[in-house]
Image 1: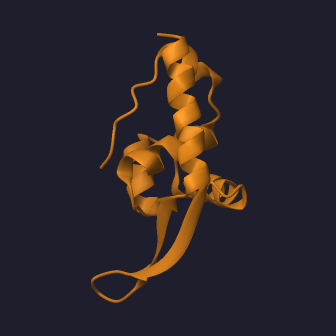
Image 2 (image 1 turned 120 degrees about the horizontal axis):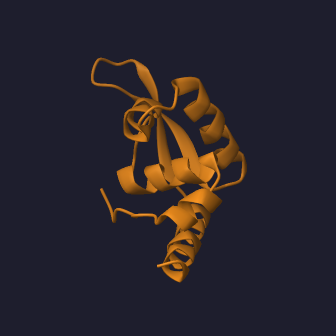
Length: 98
């Protein structure tokens, strides 16, 4: 796990749900949709999946196929370099409202 981003209320009100999911991916590091559902505090798996597809299409994350311990397939989600740039802008924005 990396730096936890504590958003102030003003920054939080400006961010879309997909960007909030991007922040969760950043904070969790390598994760799955199930991890994101647990960390989101209430978003459904279908909603998370929709946002993951959107973030992937923008090049902000990468999604690869992996295997669980029992051999079933799972999607592994990681933030991309472009996604890290967006996170850095969010951190700067958050600082402006502190």
